[in-house]
Image (cartoon, rainbow, N blue to C red):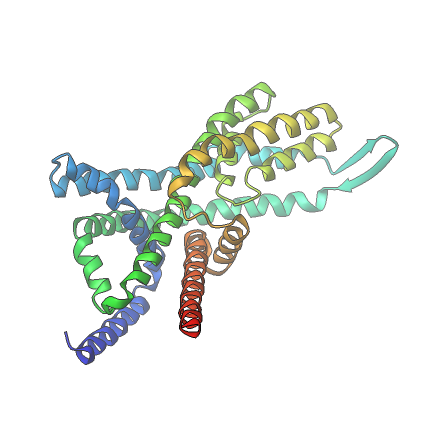
Length: 338
């Protein structure tokens, strides 16, 4: 294809994509998630194809598994906001107007009366918002499944279309970015999900052993918090420990810090991450945290994926630039020596 024709077609495609983005901006997050999930699941589809499964049925099987996996966190959040709503409101309502902490000669009174009513109102507003969003959410899940299925069925054509406007001498850059993107998505989707599942399995007996009410709910919250980089379930452990300390149960607070900190906050990372981290992009934790928080605050929930992915691709581009400059400098030094 002549370069001028390629440039015109590329510009036309970008313009049409921009128009489509404006028209479909309400579902761009769903489309982005579907594209990233489909890109990550192509190897799973190839495994089925190698076992003589028809291409159509392989796409159906992988899409079904991806959709069910996507429904798990949605179901967990719905469970927490509906089934466990009563106990949460009851806990907030039963809180005393003030709490006095008196330990080792230290005494201080914290007023809670002004915090309870806003907290109850915030929880109720959250439930109303989630309930009103369920019909739209069901449509987005359906759209997610359709896009994943279509991309898996025609992923070869999609990849060819994306790489066609790029001259062949730059394909190594595309390959490097694609490798980094796949590793980052694997870390976000597979590694984090596996660690969250392991956290739930470990946290449930720990909360049962320590005698906490609603251990299933607490274990589920700990699993969800595992998706927050660096801090993770430590947030829950810290809140519960402070609560136990505030009511004067210092022994329970210390037990939770020791046992919960070891088994819930630390052990899942040690047991699961090293076994699954070979295929990840190995993005430093600090950069992952920046991408997670920045993406979440800027784009909302979709930023949990888009933020770390953007950081990872930017780091890869800088690495490629550094390698390029190093290679050019080596050639210049060699020519000077000659």
